[in-house]
Image (cartoon, rainbow, N blue to C red; front, side, top):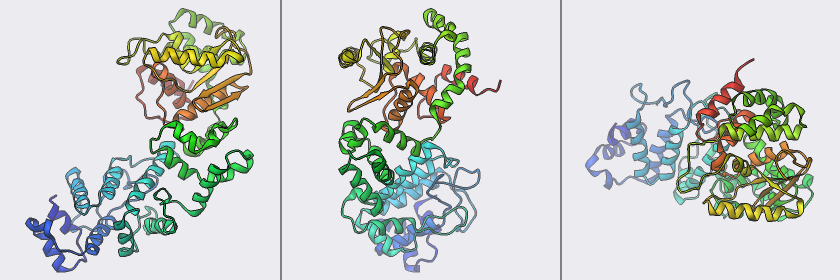
Length: 446
């Protein structure tokens, strides 16, 4: 669809002289049209499409493209017509709104509102909307089109989302405060200024301010900056805040219960498929071990089965199966020496062009003789102590997902498998053939 045809299609109700001006393609860059009329065109575009913001962003039964309901003819716009929408919006200096159209078009129309990834994208979209509202044109747009709203797919009524969010934040001056309510802003300020109060007193404010906190985290800032701004994460009980955020954004599945539920079946698979002799022997004697030793044996089995033995990241030295587990659980001889062990491991990683990742510190001379009930989860600026290994592993996964950290390359398949097995969600990482095989086995009914 041409630029002219597109604008003509969506110019119903506009003054005749405006339509004539639009129809003259040669003079379209010199059109003398009031800003308000351009806004009316944009409003007409939005009002004539079946768009909702949350959770699926585009909704039209099972069709992935949006049907224009108020056009002269009944059609579904294709990629070229969609580009015309973007072209029109960019022409009007509405790059941010054009980006939103692109985001909606690119998103899955079937996103489940309980899907952790979709819930996280909710905040990303709000941040994009912020970019529109913080401009002078955004304020003018809302004044010109006070009834602007995104349609609810159930009752087809406008919720005035942009207008409502704009009015809630008009009294604030900071760009970061746009799209957030006064309660959210005050709660965020409270948790940043009172990071050392009792957890029970902090949690209500922490939850109310989550939207602002997540928008900051999702802006791809360095982890150290996040921990500096939200110091409560680094408290000795900060793992509870991390877990609380994770459950709100991704999943509230009981990690320990789910892991123990699948442990017997997972053990059988690994006993039958792990080829590494020492790991296989350890798995065969698992029935004689205590629970923590069973978990360690299974983790070793996962590292052996899912390890990409034939691959090597560009510019990085080869990591052995024995060393790959160190990216998840690092051994230390005793509590007094664990800082030294961490430093030594950092130096070893640096020599092999790897970066240090969040790691669980376990105590013992080898993985078969780990001291029970004493585990430390270490990440730059955070150090949490646990008596339960599964709890430590849960928070380790939470940290990676919540703070957008990359999985450690040597054992990323283990992380990807655990996340999918426990939470039933596909984290945004490619699954290897072995990961798919193991997941299919675990999902299959007995």
